[in-house]
Length: 527
Image (cartoon, rainbow, N blue to C red; front, side, top):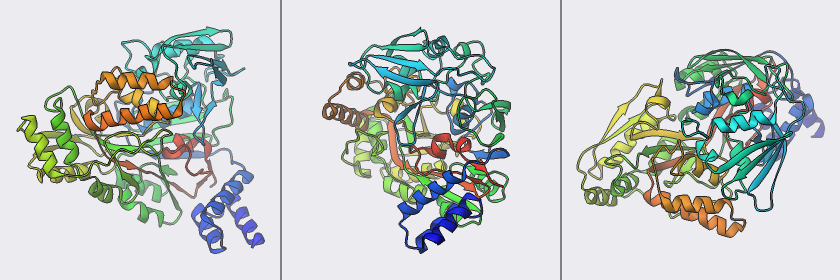
């Protein structure tokens, strides 16, 4: 059997055998799925990445209103573009830990209130300018001002000062935070020359590529950065093509127009996986498909209306008919078992009688307007229709307005009071809560403001007793579950796909889509 396996490994390394074919033949030889995947990874590493060629990536979510300014990134297209040209101080490693990027090392004071990051020696921006500690300070400052629109504003508000000392940057926090490195891995906090203050959308960073052309909502083209310090980036050119239509995106992959796509529709994922020359990957993680209601806007400022909407959604039906097995039931919090301090909350079940009770108690007798679009999450209009039907059983009338895909993230999300939306999740509870539920967070898309929640969040950051910290997060989860504007019916698996013309996929990287959006940088063109 060893000779047969060695032959299969050789064929994989030579690009003559697909991942699916290898796993099938290894299974027929009696290997477990785990052993086969390990052997596959070894074969890929042994073969080494091929350099050169053009890799074309078809992604969903982009629009003409997107920007190359990392502060404004809101979707997968923007994040994937950022990965090409920019880097933060640190990044989430494949195993979920934190590794250095622009910073080569970091350490904290014993009370986790002062953190010191050492800037990597000899690193340059794509324009040839040396990266300095002052560039880091200016970057943090740009994301900190009250006038900023940065998605990292909530994170920065917990930092009292940032200063440069030689080749180090020192962060002093208002309160201790053992998770600060995870927060600074936020994809908005890309280190730019002078902080990007002169031209935040110039796309000058320390990443492996240089943006050569960008037509937002259409296509972004990047070529290798000759000043790049690291080992990412195998293709000479990477093109990101925005294909928001699910059918068109899958067809582009199957026809070979693109090498890689995200958001394979759950409804057709099984069929796509059977297509010749196509590999489909499903990764569990913290991503969740949601309905968000603004807690400061009538009628959603009444908690009984919000409770009616929560009891009036049939979660199991939605998971079955929207996710088709590629996900799990949600429970009106953004946290699931992907998080280190996860605690179960009693599952809220579909109950039309309770929904009617709370709706009647609220005193509101009008209809509910929900805005949706395919651009919010795959199958969102269908999910909205299911929601409409389940609410009707409680005597609640919901109208659905289908919005254009283009501009959804700038004109509807975080603007309109009730809409479908999507969160990819974050590595820790603190980062997820700080980004989207802290009262002062700029991306608090439910406009949820709760003093007790804020106090618990700040206290948990400096709590070094794991049991106490876990209880604090459980208390926060219960507050959101009972009082928040988040209606979370389901956590989605990330379903991505590639053709056999590229290789190097790594399973389950950090629990996010497209290997935490590093797939274009880590994979390579084989034909």
